[in-house]
Image 1 (cartoon, rainbow, N blue to C red):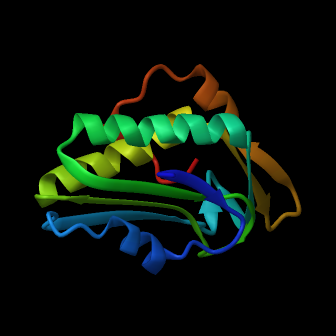
Image 2: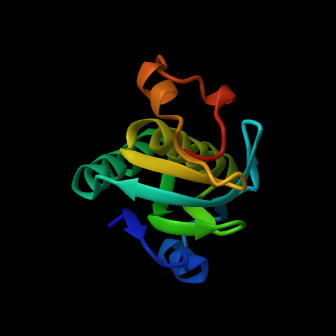
Length: 154
């Protein structure tokens, strides 16, 4: 499985081992972390939910597309669900390739596509006591994204 969810901390050492390939000279990873401020609000924690059956299928499709589109050897994406505290890792993407450039390109492609295509919802909890699902309206109304103008989290 090249795309999966976890309700516990992402084990990056184990994930990285899955990507080891003696034919690869480059390895790139991306980590998305829970930050303490978003759109004018102080964030205290996040909650992630996903329609897992559909989300895994779409996530697998995204990683498979990256493996076909870019000359890379291995790719993997792991996304947290459930409650996350500040500085927790929400998402991890890793790619190994013969050359670093392809690994960078494929890694960015995967995180961009996961952000825009996989049914994952993020609820922010604020210092004020309020909470809210974020990016829902924007994602639904947004035209196909330009990879140069993406943000880190869903």
